[in-house]
Image (cartoon, rainbow, N blue to C red; front, side):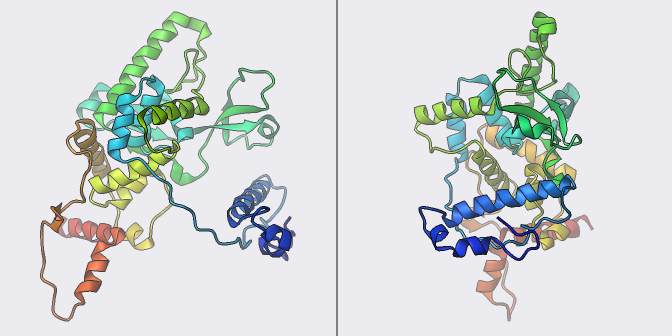
Length: 357
C-alpha cells in the first residue's frame, strides 16, 4: 500500500472515491489499518529487513473516538461482591489495585511478587511488572526476536493456529514496580499457599512456570476465560457492558481522586507514557509517596471507608483553604490554571519542596 520512498501515504487511498464511501472504509477503519501497517514496517525495521519505516509519517484521516463507559468504584465493588469465580475476583483486585493490563496480569510470576510477612507488616508489599502473556500465530513465533520471547507455552490443542508466549513488555515504561494494599497482598498469600499444596499433590504432573494466575496444572489462565466470566457478572448484575481493559481507567480515576491529582504517582503505577514536560520536571514523585497511595487504597476502598473520594481539599463543594487574589491578577484565569490537574500536581510538588526546606 505504501511506497517505500515515502511518495505515497494513506491520504492517497483516502482520496480514492470508493474508499471514501463509509461502507468501504471509515476514518476509524483507516486509522486501525494504518496503525497495523505502521506496526508491520516497524517490526521489519527491527528485524533489519529494511532501514526505514515508510509509514511513520503517513497522514491518517481524523477520527474522534467515542467515550467509552467505565465502571465507578461502587460498580467495581458490586462486581467483586457478586463474583463467585476465584480467578476473576483476583483479576479484579490486581487490575484495580495495581493498574495492570490483562496480559501483564497473566504473565505475573512469583519471583516478581513481595507479599512476605515483613513486607505486609511494613506496608511495602508490591508486584513488579516485567513481562506479559500474549497470543501469537504459530508462523510468527519463529520470526519473533529471541530477546523478546521468554518461553512458549505448550498448546492444549494440536490444531491450534496460535500459541501463547511469555514475552517482555512492548515499551520501557511498561516495566514498573507497583505497591499494593495489604488486602490484595493477603489474597496473593492465600493463592500461593493453595498452589504449593496443589504442587505437592500433583507432583510432576504440575507444569510449574511460576505463574501467579495458573490453571490446576500450571498453565496460564486464558484471557478469553476471564472475559467470559466477567461478562456473566455484567449480565447478572446489570452493570455497564465494559471490557476488562477499562478497569485500568477505573483504577487511574480512583487513584487520582484519592491522591489529590498526583499524576506522577499514578503514572508510575499504570506504566503510561510520560506526561507534560512541566509535570515531568517539577511533579516528581518519590517512592514513599507511591507506597502511601497503596495504604490509602487499603483504608479507603478495601476497608470501605471511602468508595467515592473527593479531590483533596474539597469540602461540600468549597475548598478547605481560600486565598486572596493579588491585585492585578485575573481571578477567572487563575481559577482555570488552578483547575488544571497537571498544574495542580506541579503546585503540590513545589509546595512540598518549600515545606521541606
